Length: 403
Image 1 (cartoon, rainbow, N blue to C red):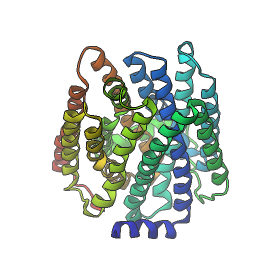
Image 2 (image 1 turned 120 degrees about the vertical axis):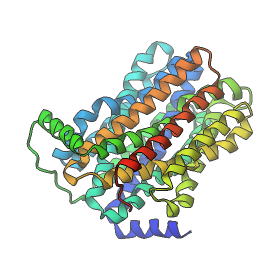
Image 3 (image 1 turned 180 degrees about the vertical axis):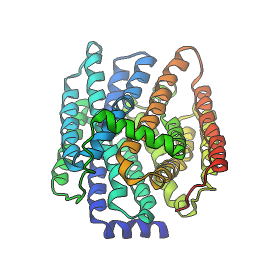
Image 4 (image 1 turned 90 degrees about the vertical axis):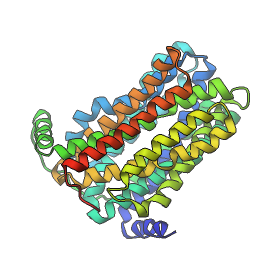
């Protein structure tokens, strides 16, 4: 496929991007071991639906809370030093998950998830603010697509393999394997020279925050693109999938296997999507992606009761997600000035993660008040239709650069 040749060529031309991508592959691949293990552990504890929803939300909330502070730190300090520190936190928090054994330790589980995902989202924000600094604008969209494909690829195989690993050796071995992969990633990170210096902004944290708010106020298009990207957070289906497994599939397969298969089949669509759609994408066609995402989730809602049909349809649920995510992210990067990359990307991630956390919490709340899982999916599909309407409004009021 021509688009694959472009990805390979870019990685050959940009050594730092290739190194970061390899580390990303290792870290993401391991992360799914822990995710399947955590949800398997929760279902074995027989926790109520709201605990599952809260656990899913905790994967997003740290990024929301730290964004006002992480942005100025990214624009001020060495990205490599920050990334090494954050990887160390991920290793320690993941290893400590081994100490959680029963429902009385949920408080510890929540704290460790919060720390681990806080470090992970901060690391991600650094990397996404780093790309515009090390790559020319015409390579940025491909780099974002590579990033999202690696995430999806590791998600696909990580979820599938972790389902079997958790089933075969248990949740605690999965935590240990995850931590070991983070250690490998850290050792590789030590060898990379980013050749990127901090902005040199010596203003106080509060002053830098005020500067970024003033910048966004002067360039309202930046805020609208941040909000547009946030709609992709409606794809935060982790809590929904866990409840689907518990309600519909528990009698068919072991919990860990069903979780792994459900996530991995959706991730097949996440991987294939950008390879098919990437070459056709432009500002006009982004509208159709939002509509396609809404329709695929509605179709999914009608097939949830049948495990095997749901598996197949979940491929279509993931098909447009990766391209939708990478294209809206690239739009924001192209319309942001270099001095504000760190802060703007941090606020962008804050809104995206806030939507993801809200979707996770709402899944539990709607389920507890008696709404069926198919109806919950339909409710969230409306978010993508709202995104389509919002995008039409943005295009009618602002001129968007093509890239």
